Length: 99
Image (cartoon, rainbow, N blue to C red):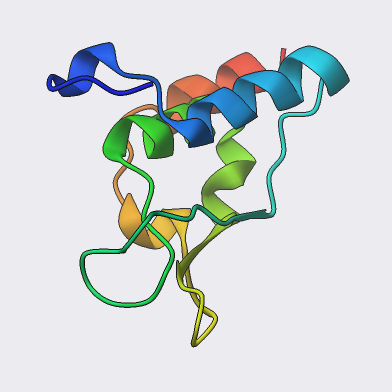
Protein backbone atom coordinates (compact mmCIF):
# COMPACT_ATOMS: atom_id res chain seq x y z
CA UNK A 1 0.00 0.00 0.00
CA UNK A 2 1.57 3.28 -1.07
CA UNK A 3 0.71 6.92 -0.94
CA UNK A 4 2.37 10.08 -2.17
CA UNK A 5 3.72 10.82 1.31
CA UNK A 6 6.40 8.41 2.51
CA UNK A 7 5.06 8.45 6.07
CA UNK A 8 1.67 6.96 5.25
CA UNK A 9 2.55 3.96 3.15
CA UNK A 10 3.33 0.38 4.12
CA UNK A 11 5.90 -1.28 1.91
CA UNK A 12 5.82 -4.95 1.00
CA UNK A 13 9.05 -5.52 2.93
CA UNK A 14 7.58 -4.30 6.23
CA UNK A 15 4.34 -6.16 5.59
CA UNK A 16 6.37 -9.35 5.09
CA UNK A 17 8.36 -8.70 8.29
CA UNK A 18 5.15 -8.07 10.28
CA UNK A 19 3.70 -11.34 8.98
CA UNK A 20 6.90 -13.24 9.69
CA UNK A 21 6.87 -12.08 13.31
CA UNK A 22 3.12 -12.41 13.83
CA UNK A 23 2.80 -15.95 12.49
CA UNK A 24 6.16 -17.47 13.47
CA UNK A 25 7.65 -15.26 16.16
CA UNK A 26 10.86 -15.06 14.14
CA UNK A 27 12.84 -11.82 14.12
CA UNK A 28 16.07 -12.81 12.34
CA UNK A 29 16.34 -12.25 8.59
CA UNK A 30 19.04 -13.62 6.29
CA UNK A 31 18.15 -12.12 2.91
CA UNK A 32 15.60 -9.74 1.43
CA UNK A 33 14.65 -9.77 -2.22
CA UNK A 34 12.18 -7.15 -3.38
CA UNK A 35 10.97 -6.93 -6.98
CA UNK A 36 9.68 -3.85 -8.72
CA UNK A 37 8.13 -3.41 -12.13
CA UNK A 38 11.36 -1.84 -13.27
CA UNK A 39 14.18 -0.89 -10.95
CA UNK A 40 15.40 2.68 -11.48
CA UNK A 41 19.06 1.75 -11.83
CA UNK A 42 18.91 -1.43 -13.88
CA UNK A 43 18.27 -5.00 -12.82
CA UNK A 44 14.87 -6.16 -11.70
CA UNK A 45 15.06 -5.85 -7.93
CA UNK A 46 14.46 -2.80 -5.78
CA UNK A 47 16.11 -1.52 -2.63
CA UNK A 48 13.99 -1.26 0.52
CA UNK A 49 13.29 2.26 1.73
CA UNK A 50 14.80 3.78 4.87
CA UNK A 51 11.75 2.94 6.98
CA UNK A 52 12.03 -0.73 5.99
CA UNK A 53 15.76 -0.78 6.77
CA UNK A 54 15.06 0.87 10.13
CA UNK A 55 12.29 -1.59 11.01
CA UNK A 56 14.50 -4.54 10.08
CA UNK A 57 17.09 -3.37 12.62
CA UNK A 58 14.48 -2.58 15.26
CA UNK A 59 13.06 -6.07 14.86
CA UNK A 60 16.46 -7.60 15.69
CA UNK A 61 19.80 -5.76 15.87
CA UNK A 62 21.47 -8.90 14.47
CA UNK A 63 19.71 -8.18 11.19
CA UNK A 64 22.58 -5.81 10.40
CA UNK A 65 24.08 -8.88 8.69
CA UNK A 66 20.97 -9.45 6.56
CA UNK A 67 21.54 -8.99 2.84
CA UNK A 68 19.44 -7.03 0.35
CA UNK A 69 19.68 -8.19 -3.22
CA UNK A 70 20.52 -5.09 -5.23
CA UNK A 71 20.48 -6.66 -8.67
CA UNK A 72 18.75 -9.93 -9.42
CA UNK A 73 20.54 -10.43 -12.74
CA UNK A 74 24.04 -10.22 -11.22
CA UNK A 75 23.00 -11.49 -7.76
CA UNK A 76 24.79 -8.52 -6.18
CA UNK A 77 23.88 -8.08 -2.51
CA UNK A 78 24.61 -5.50 0.17
CA UNK A 79 24.38 -5.92 3.95
CA UNK A 80 22.13 -3.72 6.05
CA UNK A 81 25.20 -2.62 8.04
CA UNK A 82 26.67 -1.16 4.84
CA UNK A 83 23.50 0.83 4.18
CA UNK A 84 23.13 2.00 7.80
CA UNK A 85 26.64 1.98 9.30
CA UNK A 86 25.83 4.37 12.16
CA UNK A 87 22.36 3.25 13.13
CA UNK A 88 21.11 5.40 16.01
CA UNK A 89 19.25 2.58 17.80
CA UNK A 90 21.92 -0.12 18.01
CA UNK A 91 22.70 0.25 21.71
CA UNK A 92 19.04 0.65 22.60
CA UNK A 93 17.95 -2.40 20.58
CA UNK A 94 20.73 -4.56 22.01
CA UNK A 95 19.57 -3.78 25.56
CA UNK A 96 15.95 -4.50 24.66
CA UNK A 97 16.73 -7.78 22.86
CA UNK A 98 18.91 -9.04 25.73
CA UNK A 99 16.21 -8.62 28.41
